[in-house]
Image (tube, rainbow, N blue to C red; front, side, top):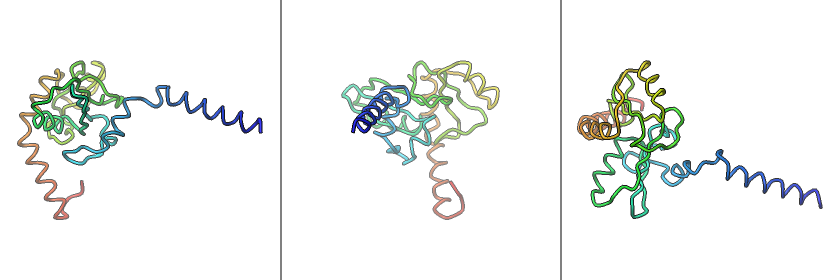
Length: 173
């Protein structure tokens, strides 16, 4: 019996250490709370490198798969004030403050829900490495969100056409 108790205590201690360590990050909880983007249905875990989490000052939050869908969210909720807006770091997939991120706009790699990519990086060095491989320019969040709004019509049109082709069986997504 003593062995069973020791084993139980060991398992309980191991579980506690796991849950309180960096292995089970609080940042991952947004993926549990908002599993799919409410605007396009995409799995946010699969797109954790581009996901956006908007937390409002009334305590509510919304998780999207991309900056494109976050722009839709912000447009539809003009009467709510964002307390924070976080985005997945392209390299680490950890949430970072959109205002502190180094945004790479454009380049050869198509974005998520958009033709013109908008990628966020916590590190300027990572953003510069991405640019060497894919092109684009470093900007701040204001420019990234402005570009997202400017791209909204052509991106929405592109998404509709792709979905129409998929329904017709002419394309795999």
